[in-house]
Image (cartoon, rainbow over all chains, first blue to last red; front, top):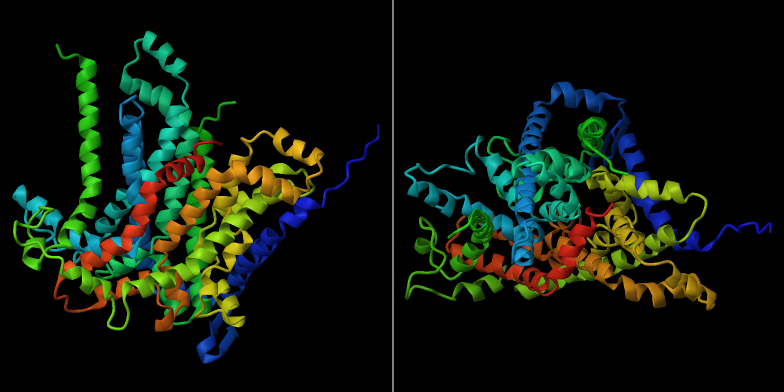
Length: 293
Length: 282
């Protein structure tokens, strides 16, 4: 009767790699990066001097590049994220009508997501938006003068935003899967009520899949904050820092200038920005996300 | 008579095809331009070279990616970190997922919570201290710096994906094996792994594809020309100030994407299911 349950040893043994990994590559780095951020830490100059919050003070008040970079990052994140989400949802919504060949489209649309981050794609993208590239050729057809996409502060961020939007496929697949899980009986009830398709979308479909909307929003947001390759290779952080994202500025200060303390402080400020946005999403989600149970 | 349903269906197909073309265009243009001379590449929208003006001369030129090495060399270097990375990710993620999904033990909740939390943490948060760590243990400018982490199940996304998949497999399966006297490790290898095959393949393929795209890792960790990987070598192409033939850039870009595309189209099923499994089920 009193079969006292033994604590199993097997799961702990199986988790040994995970414990090491989480400790060495996640917990330790996050703690030490905060520690570094309190130092003027430049191994090349053999300096390591405790400066308290001075790195943060310099960043916030004495280093305008940081704010340029915050602005560039937020512009990219706040325009790019909704664009990807809307494109992904719109296509998923169309694919969800029982059309023949859905599988083919769904596979084809996923290709850019797989290739998107590749350096080879960055090389091509720079030419697609080049002075005599196909994008300007299309504009020419409509009698619009060529746009200096990559050379213009206004347009350069959009070259990168379009590249990100091009990769909507993976997000679309997740939307599609959730749409396919919406019970058809809900729509039947609604169509008896005479609700039109567009009203069904906003009053039935969207509320049901709000948890997936939240999931995708956070994922896409995080992805945009970490953009590196295209901004580094296509627009080369410019022009005039218009695409000099924080992730790249941190790279420069850490791995090119070897100012690890200063770069760590920058990392923490970026994490704070990401954290604030994520918290806002989670807190507001109580109002707009419906969990069915 | 054409019904309203038919019009709607036609409209939907029109949108899908238009979007498909828009997505495919940059890639088709890349392939087409790799067979063209400069004047035929720019200022027009056509994908195919004008009749009689197609050339294949840029392919040998692109294959010789740098003065000292061919693309084969850079591919080999890429594989030298990619293959261990795939093996490490698959093995360590499966072990961790097995422990979390199939056992109940004190601390399990905290561990699962940690997996979910790290899922939301951007990788850049750990970058600098990990670099210092590798420097201290002498891993800078080695391929190991690009795969050592992966042997420790650090990619929570994959651990989570395998957990989710494992939950759909009836427990009776491994319980039966347990009764037959199979230890946990044997149960995992001989009973569960065959059933987990699709998700394991997905994890392996995604790791591979993302690795092919990895530019920042090699940029930070690798220095010597001996160890230059494809992503870094390709970057060299746009650093040439005076590009004589753009066809060469497009040929190199295309050749760099061929393996990824080939693997994707032969295994597309696993990618699509993997992408869905990552978020669809909760």
